[in-house]
Image 1 (spheres, helix red, strand yellow):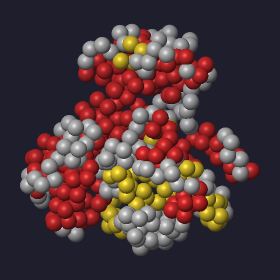
Image 2 (tube, rainbow, N blue to C red):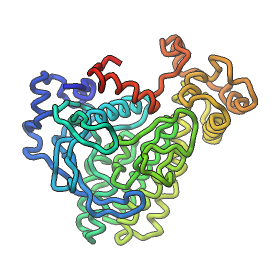
Image 3 (cartoon, rainbow, N blue to C red):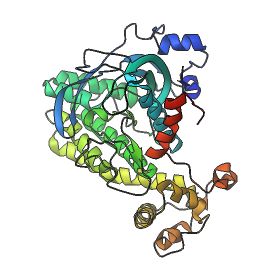
Length: 421
């Protein structure tokens, strides 16, 4: 057992498990009473870098169990690296230990930055040796379990549309509405028993809004997902599936995470565009059942929702709030921050640390590049008055998770099984 997320376990009532029970369930997949007797490897389709692929599915994982969390949300425990399935194609169905460590880091950092993300629940090293083309081999193997709010993807709907299965689309839509939008925390409630056209239109709008909010939060976090294929978008909007991710060292809209993204299709700055494109592919699945004009109307608010989420996340990272509501001011603050970040040489995370509370905590922010941003922030308040006493601010260097830092954390594990860093 290499990693155990006790907070996540407590949220679904599994914090009582001892280590032997934990390994039994999450290393050998002994089923839980009352959940699935047999794991479910799911089939879906998707556009991968713009090209449609009908041969996708859970190739190295499965849905293992479902629980309700403390907020009565239906939660999934799904695996990554648990072996071959009917959808593995030529793959071995395994996960490298380094890949598991990278997913731990991604999910913990994103959660700390306020992004709705799947949680790395468990990592168990298996003792097997794996061979990979993109890292030194042989390398160590692990099996990971993630806790997610839904396992259903845009690609799940695409599969039914590909097979011209209108009944399948209807049934899946009602399942999603019933389990993920019946009593949602964001106030969006969808009637699972509505007429099909109304149901699908409302569902498209709700899913689009959730995805837009997640991407807005990614942008504020300086996060690059790397592979925004349609099978990597969850219908709840929850961020998941962390392969070649990156965080920005400095503001760079052209930064890509995947070495195979030769055209920069999924670069940091193009993520809003990629997300909107994916949501439009979901709309395609409904076009035979809902008037096209209705679907288009329900997508008009996508970028406004994204920008609103981005503006709120920027203020959250800066630790500030305003006494009055002003969407134009909030949007301008975010734009000025990104403009200044682009024109400066400061690290992206460093900016949020140095400007926390609205007043620079150090020098380097006194030139004209920063004046418009500082002017807007001058009318704000520090949300947590004691925040600047936190040890974080005693260190002049911000907490960040660049690729170099990730490699530095992995190196002692690889060399000497040293997990201390």
